Length: 294
Length: 156
Image (cartoon, rainbow over all chains, first blue to last red; front, side, top):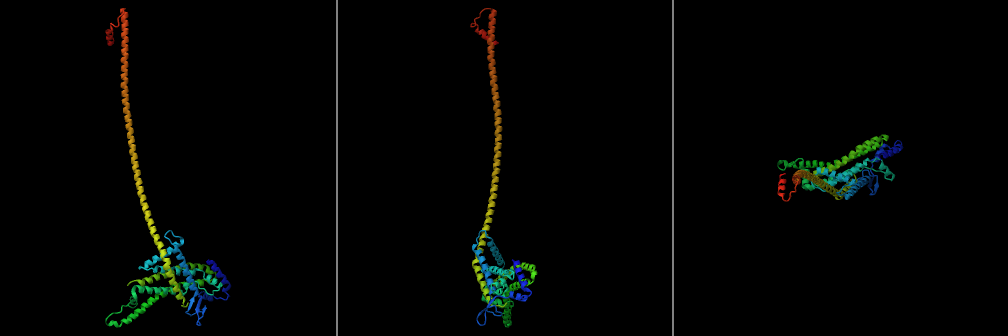
């Protein structure tokens, strides 16, 4: 499969690379451009001239991530529907291995009772894994196929779009807030934000300093709180974006791309799995921290 | 690279998928896994029980075989004893029979000898009478001299 993709790329590079209309810079730019639709200032919805416009949707990232989410949900719910306690089929066994792996990972970390956290972890793991896995499809296949049917831009790997990773980490962030407030109450949550790490004095002359200390604590703890979703999303985005960029650069190398692409793809299999696991595990850890009693 | 509405779209999509997973995927798969766990545990326990009963049966059969062997040995011993007894009895009976026959034979021989002796005696007495007749050259009344003749015969 990979070989065909590379050959395709080779012929294109041979015909266009040197003296064609597309330079290397344009090639890379084209690969990093999302297919977008946005609302222009005159109120019309337009395609692809959306730089800097916040009322825009990256159609390719959105569509591919939703398709992959549906694939995950469809495959797993099919296995779940058929699942019986008898001897399992191969796919059911695979699903059960994944589920059991997630379940033991979650149980190692999160000791409370929650119906949400384990399925959340499973969804995050499988979904991010599938989105990352799109990185292993040779970089030109889907964009060129898209161009043939009239789609000008197509960014194949949703997790190389910061909107996607940030969207997921924000959902996680709200869950963290929800779990914090549920286990500690609003008062407890505010207390956690303001009374740590320096306990403000409660009586005497120090009382004057208390508001400053509380303000200081609040700034510190807010940064720590907001850093969680930010680091969660940027870690995944950075890894996948860098990996994708290197695939694109390798695709520019002519014949040398054959061994390099193979080597990087093999290495990337590790990154794909590892980043999905890290995203899942950190989500579980954040939710555990949020729901722990102090 | 800009932040845009995709962010919100992705958040919503994620919550929907998580909800679906929580509702329709996780519980049945977990249920199947747990059921199979109990089944396997039960199966292992049953296998354990089966092994135990097999061991018991083996021990029992060993006992039965031992007992049978003991019985066979004792039967064999009994048979030997019986055979010896029979042989001894037979020997005894044989000896007795031999004795009896010996006694009977000797009695018969005695009888025969007596009979022959009697006969001989009779003949001798007849010869004696005949010789006496010849010697005396006269007839002797056998009846009149019966007592003399039988006395003579008794003396022979």
